[in-house]
Every structure is written in structure tokens, then in C-alpha cells.
View (cartoon, helix red, strand yellow):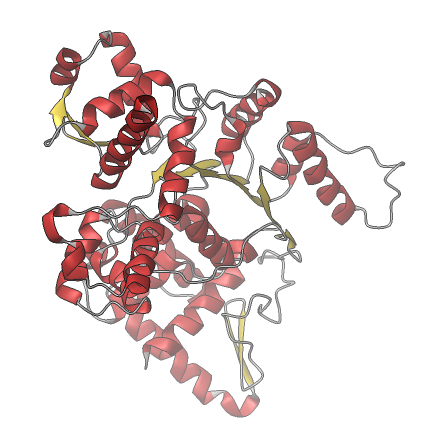
Length: 468
């Protein structure tokens, strides 16, 4: 019995029982089990906590047990599925065989990966009917090129579909691939929700505008024949409690002030704080994904399994994925390209920008790497300036100090080198960290080579202006 057949039959049984298809984690458990792997190996391969993996596996075996009418576990799932296949084959002449609440039919069976596929006897009292999903994804960008983010996708999928997290922030420095990752995620899981919505906050900045658009979408789909004037919309939280919704808010940093520490709301947007607290505290079955350069102040960077909040700070691509970018740009000096990837920290936009410059100038990666050269093409400087200009004067002072250091430094060293109080320095470091503008390893702080070069170039430019 091949793996594809196992996954297909398991998917239909899980769908019949839960109203949802196999998720990525359940599929990984089945794949590993059918290949004779232990939980330890499966967890290691997909970078997951083994204890949590066992918990998901136990739930999966319980679902299959109930559908097959026999005790299914990790050791006998292969034989149980083979018995099911034999049963299907033996009844093939009758065109269909019912196992539990699943009809496995002949060639008329819908494949499980079709978004609207479902068992024919879905209306039985023990199955969960799935409503037609309502989606407003007109603001969602096209995916374009997407480079491997398997671990991050798996993490976000688990948080949303398995752990039912209500509020997730996806942050990272400009160009790191936050929006691309969010688009890929939505494409994969949107049909698990009754509503999937994407709004960019430069389009719907005020809370009234956002809530108005959302409640209008909900109320129209619930009462398509009702006049808007006759139907009073419910509070937004009520819709989130009545329906399973995935709502993505992109460019969340547009809610916050420039020239201040990270996460301080602009005067007109402070009501978002109440909305996010409501989403976190009140029981509901929906998820808000906030994507941007910095998170709201009330979302902690360190969260626990006991809260419905999660935060993922995106870092650069690994060497293999980043190498695809350089190969797409025609750079084939792979050995040297690895050093180039490291220097630009696997940031997709940074690498594309530098690779384009190298290609247009007709120079090789070897020449670029001489003397620790950091190239800053104009489009790269533009995006760095946007984030730099958002920082407070206090943060700019700290970055200037870090730009002069050749090695990572601790808090005490920074305190000695500047005219900044310990309290201000701590606040600045926290804010820079939330903005993904500094790197922290143990108790040491540093700037990326690209940011160091940008700040030095900026300082030199301002000095030249002053001397004219």
C-alpha cells in the first residue's frame, strides 16, 4: 500500500470526523510512521517539540480508531489501513463501501486536496458540515517568488489550526519576507475558515473603517437578502465568536508613531489597543495575524504555551534557499555566494538588490567580497532609511555606538561609551530589538554588517554636508 493512498484515505476519515482536512503536522506524523520512523526522528526532521508531536499523534490515532471501529495506534496503523484497502477492493464491484462515516467510492471519489471535497454522507449527525467560506483577499499581494520557509510555515500553521491562537504577530526587518510568508500561509489554510480576510493598514488605518468593513462583510454574508438599513450589525467580537475567521492585518507598523520607541500608537489609532486586548482576552474561535516591522506594545516578545498569543520574529533564509535567489539572478559562483549570503544575512530583498547591482556592473562575487565590502544599492538604502527614520533619537544614539564596535558588546560597555542613562539605554535596546534592528546573543548586542555600513555612510554624508 503506497503512502499516497494512506494519506488520501486518512484525510477523508479525518474530514468526516472533524470537518477539516489533514494538516501539515498530522501528515508529517503519518508519513514518518509509514516509513517506520520514531516520534523522535519525526520531530527532529520537522523541527517540532516531540512531546507536542506525540499529543497530536495520539489525537490522530483516536480519530482513525473511531472511524475504523478498531483500536489504531502508531504500531498498527499500517496494517489497519491495509485492512481498509482490502475491504474497499473486496466491495469494489458494489462501487462503494462505508467505513465509519466515510463512503469510499470507486472512480467517482473526490480527491482530498480539493478545497470543497467532502464525504457524500457528510450530513450524518456525527459529522460537522462546513459552510462555504467567505473570503475578502483583494488586498492580499500576489505571491510571486517564494523561497523555502518550511519550518516557519509549520510553526504558524500549528499555532493557528492546532493551538487555536487568537493573536499572532509576524515581524522582521524590511525585505525579510514577512508578507510573502503570510501570503503562502493564507493560501494553505484559508479554506479551514468560514471567513478569510486580508487588509493592508495603509488602506484601512482607522479602527472605525476596519470594523465597518469587517462587520459589513459578516452581516451581508449572513443576511444576503436583508437591507443594510434594516439590519443592525453586531459588535465585531460577536462575529468572531459566532464564526471561525482568519484576519490578516498587514503593515501593522502604520499604526505606530515615528520618532518614538517601538509600538506607540498614533493618536487616532489608540483604539486598536482595546481591540487587540479584546481579541486576546475574550473567548472566540478566530485568529488575527499582525504583519509588520514592529508589534504592538501590549504583545510580549516572549510568550508561553498558556496564552493565546504568539510572536514570530522572522530571520534570514538558510544558505540553500538564499542560494536560489542568487542563481535566479545569474550568480553561479556558489562558494563565494555563500559568503555573500552570510554578509547580507539571507535577507531576500537585500540579496536581490545586491545581486542585481553585481549583474548590471558585470563584476563577480569574488570582487565584491574583497576587504569586507558592503554594497548598498540605492533601493536598499531607501528601505533602510524608512526604518531608520522611524526610530527615536535615543535609538539612533545606541545604533551609532554599536556601529563603531567591531565585536558584539554587553550592556556595561554600551553604558560606558555613551551619555545615556541605564534606564534609557534599556528601553532603547528593547525597542530596537522589537524593531529587529539589533541582534542579541546571550548578553551581547550588535548590528548587522549592512546596518553598520548604512549608519557609517549616513554619518559620512551628513559630515560632508556640514562641512560645505
